[in-house]
Length: 447
Ligand code: AMP
Image (cartoon, rainbow, N blue to C red; front, side, top):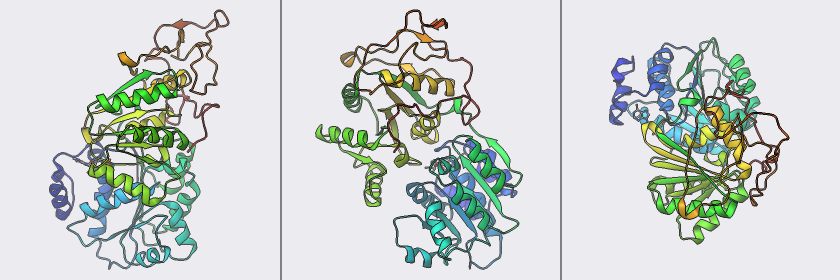
């Protein structure tokens, strides 16, 4: 029950209007200390209900003050435009019975119109790059900011916004400022630096450990011989699986465009989203997907970050993501707010070791699945190390040819097993859980 929280009655009314009955775990954990004014560092996945966990206490604080609305009093920083737009929509829903006004500042929109808007809003929602441009132009006054939120902070750093975030934090000079930082993973040293310099004595809340992520999502792998075999598998899955909406991830723009072309040629209604698409195309793709006119999206990681599309219940990893964190972000699209989902990774010879690192990172063993009519020759490495990785497999693979796995007969004395051990010792990662390789040297260029 939301009435357990010390929230203003107009906010409780908005929550009731949205038919939220029970708070989600992140809301239960974060709302009380946030309402007391504490700085928080929260590790919670996308789809957990974390937006309400920072927006409700922010609105509550802004409503309590008797200041006239002449300045920006809260800022929410996010990594992408889409995420900023989605957050604005949520803020508008939660603030619908208040007089609080929120505005959006992202790239790709008119700079002068934005400059004028900056003088009329209480809550500013934006991406760091464009906000810095406004700061440089002298348009941004942040000295009265009472609440600063850094959402998807790990991704903002991944996208190179560390310096901008630090600088914007410094511009928020009000001594009683509260800072709330949210990230899907616990991040690396970059995130620790931000926490140390921008937050004050934060309470660290870990809502889900990575291994507990997506309990409502079945995670499967299907082995494939090469990329055209993967394309056949995608076609089969999109035709035979039951899903409302599906997203297919590739590691490169080129692969995304190629797969999209194939799907359209096969009469699937699909959209493609990657970093080269302009703002209009991106908005159209997301709107169509939300409205249900299109059920399939082909996307790269950066482009799909933070998408909150209802009914997105199937994720296909055409390419295995390069890091465990990227995997977590990708499958975070399914099974949102308690729903069920299916995540399927297509694994060629060159994807195997990445997949096995991700299994170790998550401390999970993905279900092995075979599609009878599309069974290929590659069924995974013949011999596995205790880590679950292939024995003696050369690192390089172009994903096109499935050379027989290069198993060395006696070159290694290491113990081999038939199955990867799900309880194998953890490796070190950004999460401090596993030394997961951030990138394979052979991986194609990032988006
Ligand atoms: P978020 O993690 O903030 O992106 O939220 C994911 C989705 O969960 C959004 O569509 C929210 O509207 C929804 N949501 C948030 N809190 C609740 C709740 N307590 N009950 C039901 N749905 C919720």
